[in-house]
Length: 216
Image (cartoon, rainbow, N blue to C red):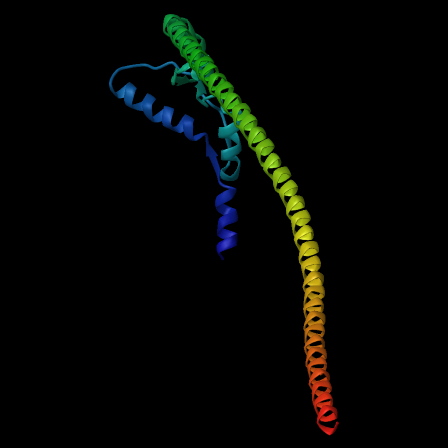
């Protein structure tokens, strides 16, 4: 079945793939009359062990140059790395200098940006302080207006009280005036009646005198 076949494949014994490629290159070189002396890998193991060997223990595993972080993208075998470092000493030095200059430029740019940000921050602080002063001044003006409104409202209440008091007094005086007018009207009518009565008495007296004189 499939699982049994997979186990058989995993247990097959193979040599290092890198060594296999080198053997092919060596075979082609011999055909061309060239002899290559290179280190080899003696790994022989199962297919399932190949990945671990290639990643961790294979002497043919290419190593990155020590100056990779500075820009060198060369990779080679461990035994060839020292030769590369010696031959490319000036190139590596130039890469380091270039990298340092780049860092210095970045630092200078960062410092300029920092200075610019500090200036902008100071401007913002000044604007905020100015705005706070304006707000404080406006708050004081608003408070003064509120105080004036409260004073005016108090004065208005006082005036309204005075007006109500005067209106009450006028109402009472009106009642008194109307009562006085009514009294004067009654006195006038009574005086008129008394005068008419006196006139009738005088007429009665004159008539009585005439009657008495006629009878004598």
